[in-house]
Image 1 (cartoon, rainbow, N blue to C red):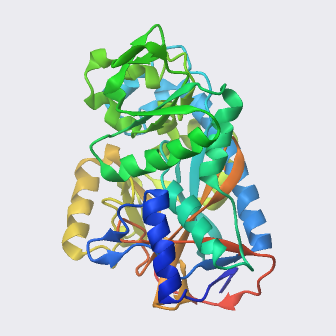
Image 2 (cartoon, rainbow, N blue to C red):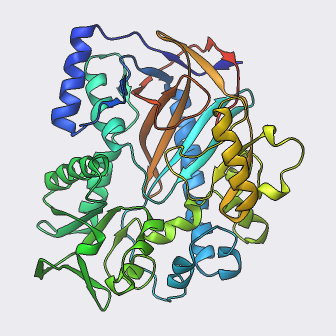
Length: 414
């Protein structure tokens, strides 16, 4: 099997040191290491231009299907119970008023496999990676003039908000303020909003005061919030006091939300379990996502499946036989057996490994869509066929044309 991309050459140490420094100080990437490992790759992945167009069109089809399914699921409490959602969220979804539409952002994670392109999931709630996909990738592209970015998702996001708002409008940038990795993303995005004349305010969801669906800052109640950008996972919202008004993120808000918390309906890894009951057509999803089942219904050997928590993120607690450490794999199997309503089993696929300057790696291509249009790629690399917090961030750049180069098919990806 040949892959429609290749590893680019490594930047020389002096040039890459400048890229890394700019990414830290200009793009707010304050955590360029995980433990003792650098998370920024000093070489890019070069993707054929025709292949980027193919991925972009596929992601846009997936986006349309996801939004249609989400809209139907909002009205289907009978299917919501299959998604592994906390009781408080299912209760909040009973409210009738749907929030006004803010810019809708998703990221579909593609892997090239022995059967062609496949997706492992959609990040439809609060997709991350903006600093790496925009700031870091831009600075790599500046040093490689024969290549170009697939897109700039942070700039596209700012532009999408600016189209809906007036200059000077206040935008609440909602995130978990105690987490520095979340804070840096919101500061980076806030700079893009400022470039379009908007006035972003960094805040926690607990800092908002809700009245008749309108939001104001508790510390500045005279100024009305005109839009909300949320980088706070929807499943965390019930941890706030019931009287804080967090339910408005799901239903009842009269201010544009990006994204609405109803995105959790498709963010759940158990989303495919609702497909038999949906009227919405999901042809693209069904052709690209591996077979997905409740763990209790996974046939054959469990080693042929990937186990995932329904509301897991950044690869946390994903179990793969032969890849996940033996002790952790036993614990994950036990959790999936005893708490099956909160887990899912996904059929394993064989990922095509890439021979890079540092050896064999497994790439993931996270394709963003903003308001239904493909907007760029968040690339990640792992030394094993599992993308998680130990993976490296890599710039994915586009060439006009690229002859495929041989790669080896080993292992399975999730």
